[in-house]
Length: 98
Image: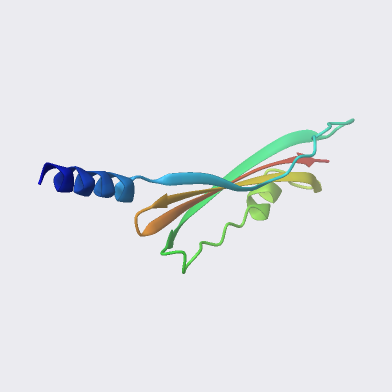
């Protein structure tokens, strides 16, 4: 009986624990030259059962920080956390504004 209880507790704790993983990341360096400045943006959203995913539109966030200039050299990182039935998505981006 005690072993069955321990197995149930172990199964519940594994089931309720969340996982985080990095899905994609870029590996290039951002090199500032001349009048370029580094800009950063962050967006997040929620998905359900891996059936729905949020629109993580990062470019408008970057463009709003670079008025009258061009955005280039974008590096992105997507972080996904599984929490029972939902998933939390986070997108981080770094770019240059010229």
